[in-house]
Length: 282
Length: 306
Image 1 (cartoon, chains in turn green, yellow):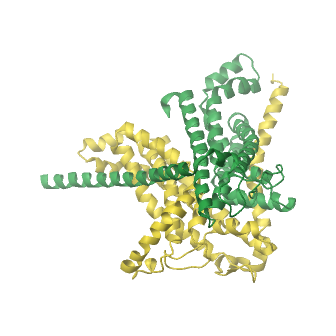
Image 2 (tube, rainbow over the protein chains, first blue to last red):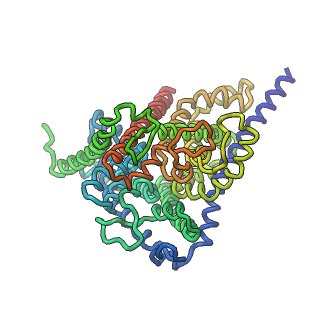
Image 3 (cartoon, each protein chain N blue to C red):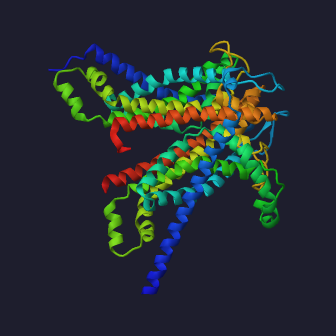
């Protein structure tokens, strides 16, 4: 009896020891990644790097100013399209839609949400790039918007659902029409969460590379508008990383550090905002 | 008396309806568009497209098998690394770690899940590949009698792709499994502890069975990610369209071939064949994600009953 108890105790310790080892391995791997990028990136980063155009192939130095601006433009346009679509579609799901309509919309959103970004990229390629006979930043934005819409939708839907029914009913009881209840009561109450969802979605698409390869395509110079090929940070990292030049590798690390900072700061800001709006619940 | 609809209501309602309809339309258009723009591949090669192992843009013979094989094997490899590690970490975080530590870890996992895949690919090229290249001769020498580990030490290949994918999906599996494990009702756990079980027996007899479908759901979601992951894989898998039993050999994946060739494909048949691969990828991920949703919904239904 006591021998078997001792054995069970031993097994208990052994198994939990193993789980601790798992956690240790997983976290050290993940933190190594972060640390290594910061280490490599910092040693290559400089103000010139942020403010200059890339140098011609073969020349040392140069910067990624066009890629930073390009990324900003592409992501801004995608966000400006995707945020209202996602939020209003969520309003439809929660406030207006019948059960069946809501199911269909939700199902479509989940389908889009689970799609690999490269599949979205091909779709936009056949839809916009081929007919327009050329790569364009516009197509890149379209691809990113398509990735972003379902994320915004699901985040917003969850948040709007959290708005207590009593608030809506109070508004309706005072004689407000439905749309005023939504615009003046439901959305402002949920605003913090909605903004969080949008921020998270934006930081997600800012790092997307695959759908940009054959839509925005990249550009070593300043772009000439949304209808022309445009540089973007993730594309620059990719091209530089697979190139044979050590100087470009160095720049890829620096660009990766910038991209990661942007993405992580967006993420952390979103989470802090959520915590401020909804207490320490999450 | 029926309430008269306000103009504002009509506007907001139709606006919201329109945007919701856009999402449905996008999903439908995505499926249809991929079918239409891959038609030449299906007309030319028929269903054999999926099981043909030749990919030759010069002679215009296209078959998707090496890519399907590469995607499936690299994803399986990734899961077989990430599932034990992630589940172990999740059990540690949910049952053993002090709350402060667990919360800090959970927060950092969420952050790590946000690292863009192209950045992971960079790590893959400059850190993982040299390491793998250094280790592979030993694998070949001591485990080479197993076909899986026989081959030249290229560095690039299935093994590297599997490892980088495992790093990508590890945060998902860990954070979702942890959440499911935390949702196991306390009374159930306390009951079995009161009966004299050790904490590990509690995990094995109560928590894991209760959380099973949720954990499976997280594994399916993670495999959905792994199947479609493009950049990190493209950068380390070696991009060679051939099927080899060895994990050390270069391979190719569906997403990688699209990323590499679509921008430069000139002939219609080449483009359509790439889109056809995209369609296969679409079907596979839709299936896997559908299963994941089903499992997760079953879990929440079970919790509703409990």
